[in-house]
Length: 215
Image (cartoon, rainbow, N blue to C red; front, top):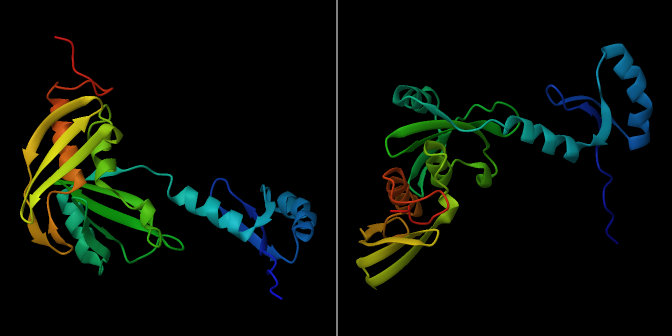
């Protein structure tokens, strides 16, 4: 018979910074201790499971948005400590600092089309990493990467074309640059074609909703 372990219970406050006061055997024990602790510390501690605290703690550290930095700052961070998860993904070169801010939260640096960015990520959770679509949206807030649709047509192993749509507008059919890469024969990344659409948007060819501008 399999038994489920009881969750760890903590007395913690979430503002201004998530902090644990202590661990307790039960939620009732933590609740009983809270009034005295709050009065003595002039704080606002509440009983919760450790998993609940950890989720709030990570959300607090990940709340900051993308920031643009200089090339010098990017290279300084790359060389000050051995980087973690240094990789190219979907048009973005990115790496994480090996020194954690707290738990598994650290700063991630990213380069995209000659511009440089930083944001906190959970190094253990790739879904929090900086993406090309996020950077494109940051560069041009009026442009919505979610409206970009990419249709690839492979003519042969090393030849192909790509249709790029923005909302209901077909931008163009482009020749793709298919090369032998780490994962086999691949063309340009999604981020490359999103950048193509963004430039069309900046050039006045598209409306924010993805239709044509009135003539």
